[in-house]
Length: 386
Ligand SMILES: [Zn+2]
Image 1: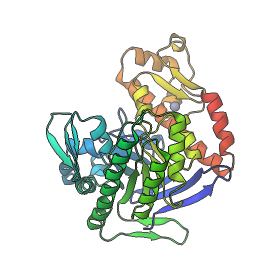
Image 2: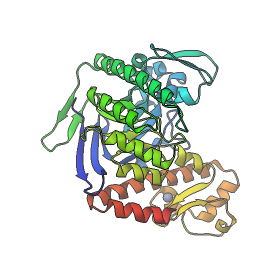
Image 3: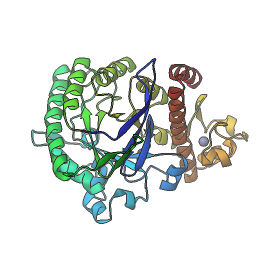
Image 4: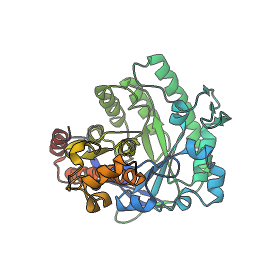
């Protein structure tokens, strides 16, 4: 299956690359950081804020949207883009992870996964087929397949194997159902190598926990299925950095080069750089906005806590190098005061800054790959940040 992904530069010293993923809502430059709009909103930010901080693709959660407002209602209202006034790209995860992490009850069978809503305890069934239907109702640009997720802190190989086998069987069904929902695929490669895309894309999810042989097997299996890209699921869930790096490499080494790879739920800037080095193109995480609501600010010199007394008279912006709305307009003293006073505006301004820090980091990552200096950039970034 042709993937609307154009690789621009490959780093000669690592597996890092830059590229453009084309979706029906326009191009997305990779490596990319995708802010998380869990419930049709990136917490504390508007779609206009997201444009201002150069976000190109958002991630939203099928599980959450299915339960509230419901995907039926979203469809009636013209889909998620129109609903939240966002004209960039949107990727939806499959709900597999939320069923694993949020639901008080989860029962996996061959048919699908039965779970209880974390809102009211009502019972629901996700199947590989109906998740594709829900994503179609949401109208997102990139759909992902239902998978089985397990924790990654000392998992047993038996559990990892079982989850992988179920994920593989569901992937076959999801890929088949996608063809039914999108029978006429309309992806055209233009003479300049760009693509015109008129339908939603499908990404498969690769499981296998921390076991490199299982990860390799999962990657080879997924590579055989008709998909436009790949997700690395079930990581950043308690494993060590070394286990994560090894699992990532076992996957990227066994996937075709010409399709994008997305690491689900990662992470800190350092973890992201480590994965870019190993050939991953797309990232998302709730972490930058979550910590912003606790007063934590990310800068090139590492993290700062805006609650600290030393900022009460500090007239400098949060980060001299940042071009976000908060840094263009306000002092640390003001932001510190807002946060201490419990003013909601501080959540908005700090979230804006933290996401801009990550989108700006990705801009610098892309620039360094294009200049052939990625590993040097990474080393200097980590030295300063840590
Ligand atoms: Zn800023």
